[in-house]
Amino acid sequence: MDTGKTTSNREDAQVLQNESFEALVQSVVDYAIFALDRNGYVSTWNAGAQRIKGYTADEILGKHFSTFYSKEAIDLGYPEYELKVAAETGRFEEEGMRLRKDGTMFWANVVLTALYDKNHKVKGFLKVTRDITDRKNAEQQQKKLNSELELRVLERTSQLELRERELEFAKVQAERANAAKSTFLANMSHEIRTPLGAILGFSEMITEDGASPEEKETAREAILRNGHLLMNLINDVLDLSKIEAHKMEIEKSRIRFNDLKEELSATFSSLSRNKGIGFDLDFTSSLPETLVTDQVRLKQILYNLIGNAIKFTDSGKVTIRVYPRGKEFVSFAITDTGIGISEEQQGILFSPFQQADSSITRSFGGTGLGLVLSRSLAQALGGDLDLSKSALQEGSTFLLTIPIVDEDASIEEIPVYDSIKKDKIAAKILVVDDNADNRRLLSILLRKNHYVVETAGDGIECLEKLPVFEPNLVLMDLQMPRMDGITTATEMKRRHYRTPVIALTANALKEEKERCLGLGFAEYLTKPINKTQIEQAIQRNLVTVK
Image (cartoon, rainbow, N blue to C red):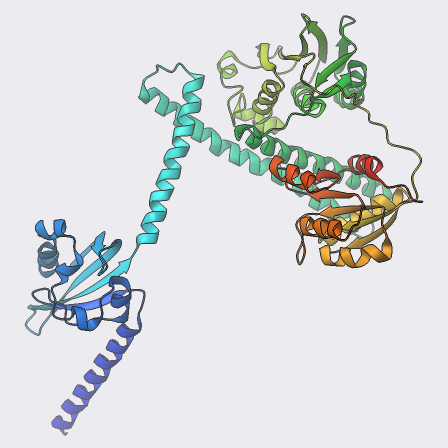
């Protein structure tokens, strides 16, 4: 056997292995990889080290690695400490600040590994440095956000309790609030998935072969009912966020008490009857004829309170008594004979993300947002909402009080039942929306009302169809590919089209609405849009066919 040749082959293989490793190290640009001699002087330098630290190989080879440390760290002997630990234990690792050539500091993850000779004596070190500045900045930002959230929770809880309570007590309350938020998120997931499951399940049933007309009708009603439940839930969450951001819009008008009574009776009498409980409406004769307030928000509060009263009452009745309080206010007392609320739970009844008892969620559903939102809306209307009285298994009375009239409010009279014109105008409407299902739905609704309908998938197609179709009105989605709704409406104006354009959008922000109306949109409707809402908007803006 030729031992000299074998040794030569091994040496050649080692050279090739070393050259391959060196090529691999040089190709790495995300890590600074370089070697130090036993005294800490730089002996190799890769492309990643040049990118991260700013030195070329010619500039740094032969220099001590303390070049990468601040003067304070050098004075404290930190570079020597790293070498000592690595030499004694074989490895040193830390995260700390390092210095670049240009004088800037950056966060680094550093691993220093000892290299040994054949006699297991330290002959040098291999150092790997990774720039973790982005990660550290993200961690610091997350800590800042967490601190801000904790501060908000602390402020809320301290408002509910006496401000002079000690910090430790406030901290306990903040932790309870965080736990309540977790419960709220779990409830929210349940409340969203439940109607979604019904909608998807009944939708599949309708499309199956063999479904009877009765089953299809049951499915249709369930889809509609659960769709409204889901929409109401989303609206509650959005409204609460608007209130917290001080962006809630209040639009007051004059409405008749008799109209309000008629709608409440039509909406809730059948619900209570189906549950086998009574439902009484008592609007006292001393009430004035009209009330000036935000009709939509008032109904939102009343629907929540009355809906809860019916939901939590299995026997007895629900009574709504409406009466004046002096000359300036009107009170709505909603009384039920349901499960009631314990004294302990009454204290957190109007706390965000709370229900009086977690078992209520399991039995009746709900997210715990309703009463918080209702009180906030009542206060936005210039009034308030309180629990007047309650006892377990005896029932509850909630008292809503709002002003009867506001001198600064519009006195436009808008009845609860806003009639739709019976005589349909033989008009042409162009529906512009990038979502095919939305176009199809609007087309069906409009054609049932005897309108001539054409559709377009974006602004460019809309502009192409305008001179051919000559619509009397345009329903325009705002967010579309190729050309959005605002750009399209602006271009229509530039081309001297006087056709009214109604904006259809999922964006419910006040600023966006004001922007669109300022650009000349006839109206601004937020999705999802029901058929009554769209018909009323059309009747207000339709250009008569000549």
